[in-house]
Length: 175
Image (tube, rainbow, N blue to C red):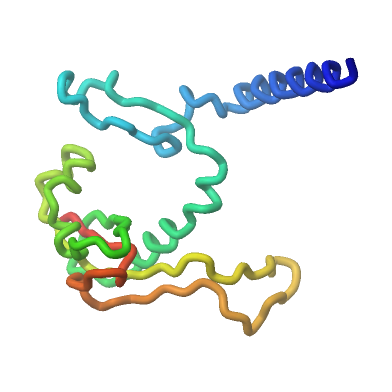
């Protein structure tokens, strides 16, 4: 009997939590496009019909464990370039054959972007290795903690033709 009461309380609490999330605007159907995954940009049968876009909410874990993407993107955007253009930090799998030059100039990659960028000139501007599982430093907002300790690490290859387990991010530019 006691287990049943606890179970009922948990179900009620979870239901209340879902209602609160919807009131705060966390309903997946109402999230901005930047907060969702697009499982299918264009359906082969319906062209560029908006009904082919499927929205599904990212879990909170993605915001804390995907920080490598933000690090790579900040480096790619900070690198000097030959002029105006769109910059993308594209993930690359360790050990795969294509180099960053191959990845950035691949027609399949440009088709993932909006129609306006598909016809632009795509090139690689840099390849990076953003190291995973680096030491986590303490928050230093209030006091100077963890000073003189190593934290995050990034290796810049100064090349777009490195293969193997070298780069895990490619800096691609569309201009």
